[in-house]
Length: 137
Image (cartoon, rainbow, N blue to C red; front, top):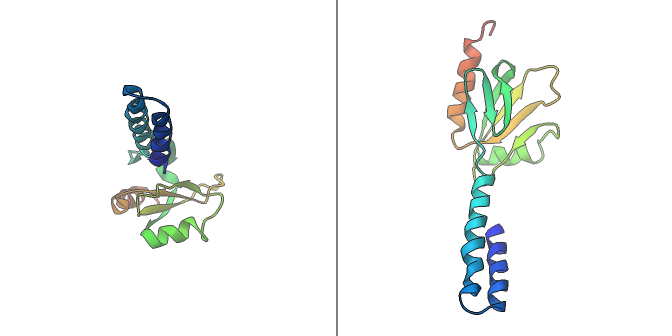
């Protein structure tokens, strides 16, 4: 949809000018909008030694509880009727799978995180592996 808006803006300028100036908005606006869309959707999901990173948000692994892999249908339900308003959500519509990570921190009002990821099984296994290596679990 944003690309269509950029094309319509370029077409509007195109109608008002002749020659090279009529094509300049296409050359500027369409690549600029493509870059903005790429930049907006580049949130990384990373598990390092002691934290889960989702975009700029981070969660210490000691507070990771149950981890659920969500397919497309489960993701739709989890982000719709089953969504807790206090949950942390990073939804990217073009990625069909997601992960729901329940938090065990009693001081955190966020019950769980839901975030889109292309490899939910891999991230879930890393989180579960860390939970198994913790003493007392």
